[in-house]
Image 1 (cartoon, one colour):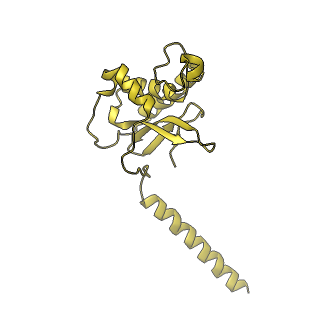
Image 2 (image 1 turned 45 degrees about the vertical axis):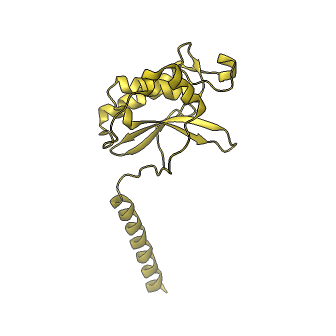
Image 3 (image 1 turned 60 degrees about the vertical axis):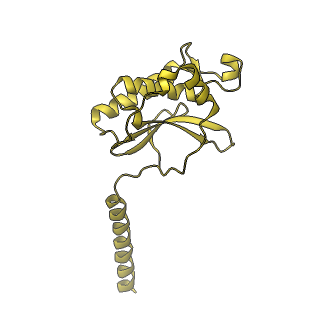
Length: 169
């Protein structure tokens, strides 16, 4: 009985170590994206109003190298924007259902936070091609915009509803 229990424990430990090794060997996990989709209406209108903001193109090259300095910059910008900007719907702020804009008046909704974080990270030297405006569905079905930062260690999400910068996984 004791010998069988020991073998089972050893086998369980070996399986766990194998699983950890496989996960580590797989390297950083990156977001899987589907095919092309339609551009959000609010983003289309934003680009019509401010074409220079949408003509910024960077070749889709390697993700930006995530250094300690860059990580500190990402965290600081996320915290700064989340603290400076106060939540207000587009209807309250602009009198329309959907309006993408930089939060110049200190108020905004999710995409306004994401746009500001993108602008500040670009000003800090992060290539535009590694800063992805990302729209997802919340559990209640509503759309929610966040900023995804592509790095050498995976993608990270900057969300106005979350104080921490999180890995997308």
